[in-house]
View: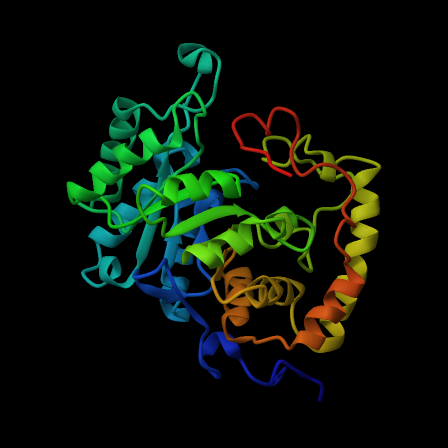
Length: 354
């Protein structure tokens, strides 16, 4: 039987057959499982879901030892935070098990009240969002608080002073940044250490390799990859041409519209075949690739399915060799993806670089 990274397909890595890969969240932060969970799926961002499905995901995370839960003020109008808060309130051991991260700084609703710009990093606005998040999460302190998006109308150094104030007040334990440039990370870190930077990263979104992965490693900052399975394209069950994506986050996304989707499915079919040859789910292999790109990398896939979560959990015990990484990248070389990762509307508010 073929062996991948020292694990044969007869083992069950998600069931702790092999020691789980763990990573430190920043220079002196907590140690967490290298695979966490991104809760955008607790809303309807990728299709209909229910509260029971979300609770089942949280139960499965505890069973699998996946102790990092990532959410945001913006997700489903606060619903993701609310579900997590009520779940922890109903179980004495749940809150102590999870390392929870949430985010603020994006304007919710009609941005006309914010001069048409989607981001707002003013002290008053960030304070309002953090306080609301703490109430929904039913906690006095969140383990990691991200600036969800930077508003360049304020110097990042000034925004950092607000975030440092939250930490000094005991409302957050660590500071993170989301979707910023390496240069912005350096400026922010000159004010206070940054525990984590979160950006999209997967086999078809490789921009963080152009400076962000390296800067995080240099500064002792964890790099947290969201959408690490390419919004489903790097799984065994990707969307198909003709699927109704109405209301989904990827509706109208260039990579999921024709003719780009057909081209991307053809490329990733080769990856699915490779994963099949190795006896692992495609999502497991895609996540293992992310973890192999640095000892500071963490992946936070999202899903509505417990079965898919258990596939993700397997990657936390799957150590790829350099030869296996090269084999994967030969099948999906850098730059293979057809279409931009965001539409023009989706790009509003992110900091671009390179």
